[in-house]
Image 1 (cartoon, rainbow, N blue to C red):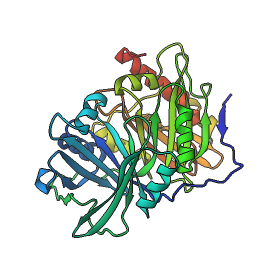
Image 2 (image 1 turned 90 degrees about the horizontal axis):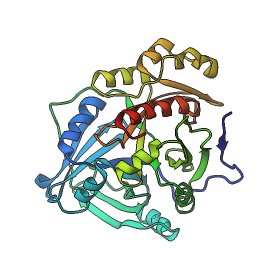
Image 3 (image 1 turned 90 degrees about the vertical axis):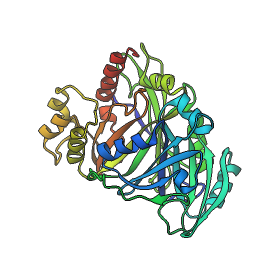
Image 4 (image 1 turned 180 degrees about the vertical axis):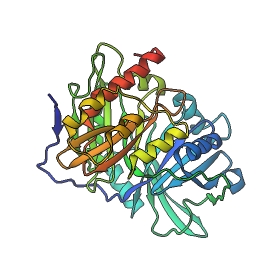
Length: 375
């Protein structure tokens, strides 16, 4: 029996400040030059900007990658000292910043801090010949932050300090569109703390709750609550481990990341079959489910537009809610530590997160954990 619980609907969403959407996701990594090649070759991103010593920045290098509405920034330290090097030494490659795009960064930061946020960066005005950016930041779980970015008086590429890049290495895009949601893993007992943070500080609403009966297997379990802003463009599921016979995937992540952080980034596509087929051809590895999953999936989700054989060939999962259905698939970790991975998702009306697939998905994750000796 499913125990997916809708959030209370007595009060309408009331954001602390308006958020237009995700501005960018910044990763702090050990070798940004090589990571940029990976994301371009395997995920179809285009290199459009660079910041480093050649542009007057002495302590780091950053590569700006774009695909449709996605902006990824890959940043590395230029020496063994400082915050970036310390972050990578502790966590490995991972998400540092999930940035918000707003109309008034100063006001947004002031509201967030007044409502209990810890400042990660006081409002600062960055200038160049293309205008000005106002940027601030607040802390969230672990060492992760939310930058708050105002662009209304800027006509440049991205941020002052970045220069445009025109590279001859330009693999074709693969149909990735925008960030659908970002999932955070936090310690046992801390999920509700961060749910309250997003409620109190940002005015987000808990739109779905999954308990340890929904997200469980024979060996392990976890709990999750999905936080969303009012316009639904920002969605942050927050996971914590639950008691089980063996180590959960959340425990494994926390062990190897050395604390809370972003577990996966879900990216939307309009044609998941074409996107995943191309990603597999370019070397991206995905979790797999037993073929028997597809023998009964249509009994559960009903009629779909896609050919079932194509989904089974690629390992794409299907789930349905009251508003439609979705298709989803999850990569294996994209670095040596079993931490950050990606979800590719196509929504055909559904606004949920694939609760009907949780058991199959988590058993697939456990098979990988067992191979690593971490279950």
